[in-house]
Amino acid sequence: MDELIQFTPEELSLIADEKFFRAKARLMKKVRNTLDGLYAALKIELAGADLLAPKDFDPSRFQFVKGEHLEDFPYQYLDFPKHFLDENKFAFRSLFWWGHHFVFALILEGEGLLRYKRNLINRYHDVAGRHLCLCLGPSPWEWKRGEGYTLPLTHDRKSEVAAVLSDRPFVKVARFVSPDDPAVSEGRIVEIGRDTFRAVLPIITP
Image 1 (tube, one colour):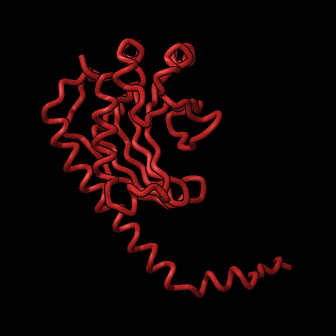
Image 2 (cartoon, rainbow, N blue to C red; image 1 turned 30 degrees about the vertical axis):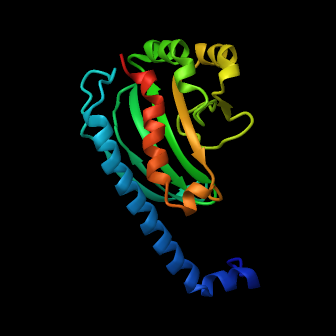
């Protein structure tokens, strides 16, 4: 006999709560509109940027992605600029992760990696103190923050960052914005995303 699948009262309440799902749909539309606004702002930034990009880099390439299961939570993101070819990664990802945060991350791997690392250290004080952190996860696709996951890029940590960076097979520098940050309620996410891109430019420019 098949096992009976029973629902708890709390689960039945959620199933019946159509207001939540309508609210979720509205919120996800607002997130997409925010990413659309950021895409427009980044197009302006990229138009005047001289980037140390890999060969075959196309500055017009981008993608919007929406899903439901980033560790069981819905998400949306914009990749722009976007270059994923073989082992090469040269991208700026703007991610909304439901229940967690917004993240704006520069992801670099493969061609040019040593130069990007040198730029980060040689221009460290141009990058430090701007709410950025070095991501420490084993993969570029880890989006948690905090101890063991991120190392804040503060002016007093240059030697520590250099030591951590030396053996890493990729570079991921990110800014995290919590849902309770006033910038979210004030509608400044596009501004923060644009400012984050400007903050990481010393890593990827001549």
